[in-house]
Image (cartoon, rainbow, N blue to C red; front, side, top):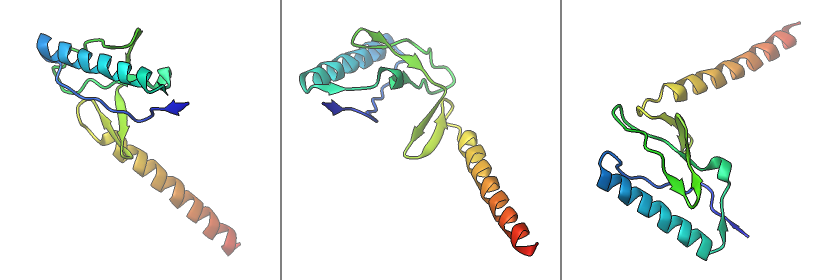
Length: 112
């Protein structure tokens, strides 16, 4: 069995033609995956609607309607629908604070 993780598809869906083209691409992707015996995790199939005035149209892959998500990790970077990286900065700060806490705890233990 082959797994198709981390497949990304993008397109503009601000017009009827754009939405139809994006759905056609999803249909082609599903057909290709079936033909090549590729499996994907249905729980991970999500849409990130980007932009302030995005109509957040629902799309489907095969017979499954795709849910949406508010944040996506791309190449290790968290990006939200407004292309804002504040969640990335918050996650980095949290990780840095954990590391500082470990260092502080280690130094305090050695001093005693």
